[in-house]
Image (cartoon, rainbow, N blue to C red):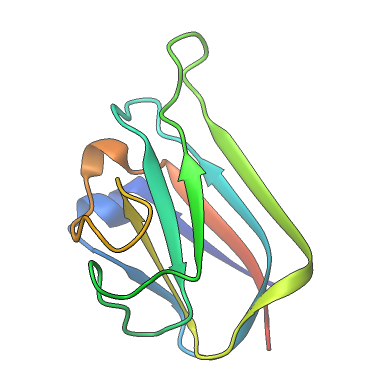
Length: 122
């Protein structure tokens, strides 16, 4: 099983999306660690594509990540897909402040601390 880890630094560099795999994959688990300094909620968008166009391409899976609360400063989201979720073309990921096709740029203040995707070649 392969693991792809993307950190807040990757989003701050101005990347609108990250190509996780340019070949077909089957996602088994996704773990998102919120950033203690996030000032707004965010959405991790996953695309069955190697060239998704933010603002135009409809995501295939969207994960809502609430900004950390003041009490403990952490947000964790774990999505387990026992049968796996197949992406036939490849897998591209982006982080935005809206769930679907709006918001074409990453907002660094909302970016999670890390996103780990556990996947098998498919």
